[in-house]
Length: 337
Image (cartoon, rainbow, N blue to C red; front, side):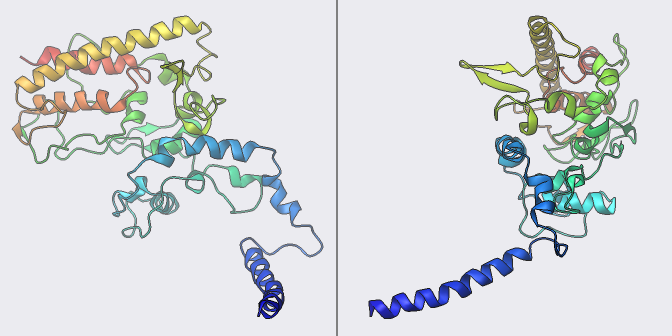
């Protein structure tokens, strides 16, 4: 019995291996006769540890570990799933044809032309075109950072309060700019610009950081904690979080001074956020968990609540555009009782 089984295995094994080899060869384009396959695959894959390093970094990123790619409806999937984003960019639409089956989180193929031409151009970004922002139609054009702005931009709140406009009826506690207004904060646009003692100007980042998100979030990495394809700006160091300054040193040559600037901006905006939140709660437009209270509110109250959520959801604590964030909060505080 053992001899029969052994003979059967050795007889079948070559056929199994043949099927495996055939199936593998169908994964890529048909090779050129007489040309070693390594001449094609090696263009990208013979790059030492570069790919492994990027995969390791990305594996620790919020895009890879986030838990929102189940948002697969046609309107949400354009940003929450890889398939939806690719379809949106290819078709130039804000929504896709329908819900995404078997949704996948953002990955290498979302942002790069992986296995498209089987050349180094496969590392190119799927888009670098300037982005017309939904909130007000202004143009975001920060080079390679444009691909990020396609999703990291606020949605248009419905209804949208207008300066000096009529009361608005807010239907849901989740009303607002959604959770990714970073592009408009960096641009210095999209807020409810109440007239006040502070003018709406921009910090130097708006003018000097020509590659936008990529410049600061993707410099040479600190392992798989910050920079590179982690996109993170902080890392854990001896029990505390530290800012990864690798992308900042072209302008900020004094690391200690930079840390002070970051801390001061964060502390100042925290105070303003606390003050504005207290007023919004008193006026009955915001609750203690940062949700808007549904109901009819004046345009001013709704706009001030929108500004609060704008700065809060930006999550940069002033690093993206301190001057614009400070003006939105300060002028909102001044305008409320």
